[in-house]
Image (cartoon, rainbow, N blue to C red; front, side):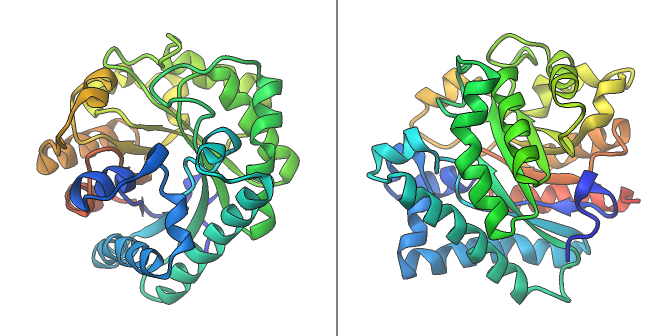
Length: 312
């Protein structure tokens, strides 16, 4: 199912969209701590998650792409879990169950979507829109239990999203190496194309690679609009070849503006698709394509329509 995943070799892989914003703004759900993982505790919510993933897998089938199923575990770490009453044993259970759940979804699509991978999703320790403090060693110790749960449950890769500081990315990559599982590191960017910590994207990628001997299988950018970082890729700097995935926001608003927004800014799905296709012309290694805040399967469908004619 997943032989082509490491380093994103092979075909284009589609990914899902803005799960949490879909739940809050489109489904009208209360989502304490912006956490989706508690949905796995309810049979009816598990059925909803299956339908959510199926809508995106239908796009992969239609466009003949691969697919990466992200576990709904972006908040399933100790600090955020504690706010919802989850201790360490509970979190280990829910993270393992998330992998099993997504693997069961993937199994239903064998033969229709090839290949399919399951990514164990990790979020930042703190707020994704603010740079977290602490050392790489502290981040490694903090995230190691979730990484180990994913590795033990058989996830294909650990995907760390919405990271705003280099040190946390280094710690997660080291934890993944210790657990023997591939790692994808995804940074979020402000409107100036810099991480919330102030680091330049290229410098952040190079720093993580230097500190981990290039352990991450690939890097990604998520929770930002292409308008905010496309200019960084002009001239195809060497570090840009390490970016293999993008999960873009629908909106061009800043993180601060999105935090204050009481309604969903869904942007322009067709324009988003064109912008991602333009990035693929600059980055032929860009293979993993999905959406983040404000996006849904319509946005992913437009991305697939714009990009699949260029697949190779």
